[in-house]
Image: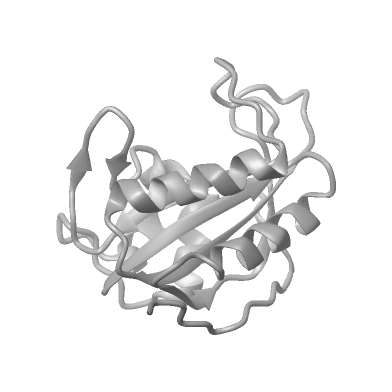
Length: 171
């Protein structure tokens, strides 16, 4: 089993609901179990400021899936939520699911970069990740506690809690 950390974000169409629906869908992925889930946070948007604030969370997933198979599952969930992929990298979105870490692997291919290329600069990833994995060490040896002490919280605020059910669907 691989321990994977997934970032969840939304700033359109009832973001808290979109993230909860995504958590529920991730909990249904074959051969995978959600093992931890951060609080839901409000964050300022990256890029254009003329969009609503985001809601973000991070979850820990135990999975037997390979990285690209998990990416396919997450993109399917995004598409079912109504995500439309545009060239606007930091524009508003109904749902954004990012693989932040996949075990201790470093992956760099056309479709996937792990650790996530921007995780070290994103308070809405680092601080929720710290909440659920205080002992986490990145593949390069950097501790999540060190990153959390170096990052500005940029006005990040806890909104509330999400819910998940432990399910193991591998047969």
